[in-house]
Length: 336
Image 1 (cartoon, rainbow, N blue to C red):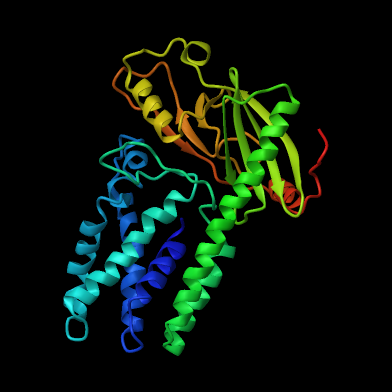
Image 2 (cartoon, rainbow, N blue to C red):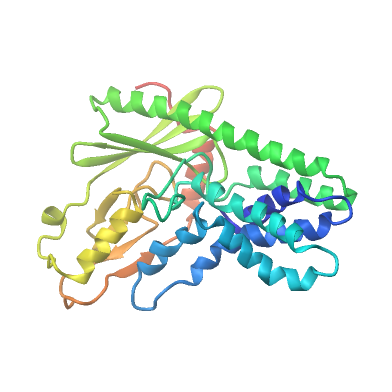
């Protein structure tokens, strides 16, 4: 999730180990420890566009690395607070703060190598958006209140709110899943695989992506008091022979595509206009396929040249209006 959410959640859990005399320092340690796993963003290359994708949310986010990550945070912070806090106290706060990060990231759809080095699977529970103010703001307020009042009760209230909201996300996912499956069946489709991800900042509007034969179908599912849907688009699954028949099988660009396939959990499409291999899971509007990122492929490149990483996160006013209408249910239907 975003840095503010990660730091605040880390602070809340660290505060649960504090007392009224050290709650401020423990909260700060937890906040920093909650941010620490994302230092992996500095693992990047100017020539290899996939390196940062491979290593972000990798070993620093795994359960295996938590004791070591907490130790690194402790060794950095302890010299600054050793006059008032013991080494054990700093380590425990760092451990609690660091632990939250991987679990919270696994709740999103981006993917986290939670079980590295024993598994290379990107864990995605899809029960919260990567940015969700409805989740974060109450936690932030409660953590701040705990610091101001020096009462740990507010830290536990924060943990309670997190738990409730994340569990609600699982409930909403299951509701959306049933509707998405029914929608596919209404088209005469039996999904070979189906996944959903919450749209930006809420647990009401979901993006549904399912595979049927050679195509991905994308729709928006709205789960409020009743469930409705906004019909979307479809795109052919990426296939070398169909989309890039002239791409050298031994080229670096092909290797980059396979690395991207792993990252995207094999939800790959192709944009002919941009010669772009896309991640179908992500778009600004949940019933659209318009890509947010992908790999630009040039079959004229030499065998050893990398593909070019492309991103577009511009939200046009028309898209924003469409998103708002879907969120309030203005453009969605409950009839097949």
